[in-house]
Length: 474
Image 1 (cartoon, rainbow, N blue to C red):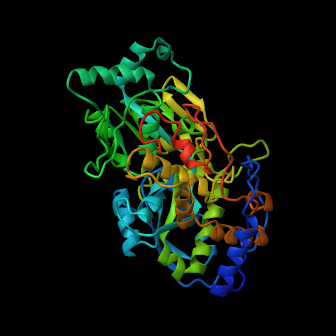
Image 2 (spheres, rainbow, N blue to C red; image 1 turned 120 degrees about the horizontal axis):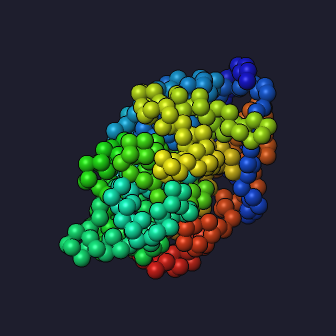
Image 3 (cartoon, rainbow, N blue to C red; image 1 turned 45 degrees about the horizontal axis):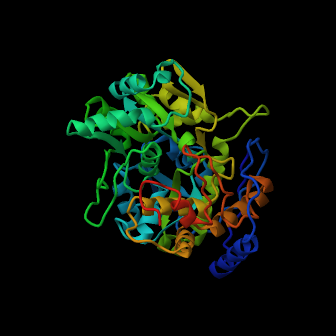
């Protein structure tokens, strides 16, 4: 693909804002009838028109996970450079430090947990108005248990003794183990990466779907262990395998490559992925402070353009639908300054395969999705799902009216910025018109693709909450 530079131009801020608001306003009131496209063929040509950005030297943070890929690829493949941006990409030790550094201005933006901008904006934990105009990926997580727990699960369910047991695997076979531990005066310990992480909500969802209470957050219990039958605690992603091997936890929910690392080291067994907990669930977003976006509207557009290009590159396919750039991406990510895990371990999930056991390698082409299915669009309904989980588990302490969920999502998710960047990319020849959901109202169609079969419709958050037996239901 050739990139040609044209003179930079600046869209006046007031005109830009009016144009973007008009663009989104014209799309409201109509659902996207389908989540697509499924394949992303190459596009020849393209002519970049760099914007006259307010700030060209930027620092972005990330955590050592494969789903940091859009930021890393935007840097390594020159997509930031083409937009007139000089970007430094800096690993962060944990999610709290990453968020604090964005709020303080030490970082201009970052690879964030989808729940972080929402939680910060509503004041759970650190209070700050954080926005996102770009979803970085779908899926990408797994739940791994120790070998000892897996052996006990197999004793409880003989079907799990197969070298390739049927999936999805619910937590049903774990429930007797949990009950035995409680009877002996102990509780199983399991790790997740952060209180407002997808991982926390996914492991809670998986446990609760089998009748295991994962605990409630309260005004006095910020650890979320009230009434817990299994105790969940925060463990940084790269530390998950070592913490499991040491016996400090008996299982965890984390992104890649740290589930595959457990298989490679022979210390644990992934029992499910979040694709089976919620098919094509949103995972990470690119987050900035609202004030940064307001002060740097041209730079915000330029960054979003570069990230869209990176997501498309990651999901590009050949004529047969095979991913063509993932091996190169895995090699880049394996570098010590990025994820720093073995190439062969990263390559598994990035190229569409996942090992549940060394005897159980499965094709999972959608384990990591970075562009197709309108992945990168900032859907209001994604934000509302996270709000329902915060309410379900007590992080939001009081019931809220339905409109509050919609208003909060609109404070955080900024499709007008995304659509403005996407329109430029279409006109420049880098993406196709059909690759953007222009006619959506920001809500994905209702889905029952959950491990418990319950239906989620982002337009009716209170009806969704009312379906559950464990946790807050209003």
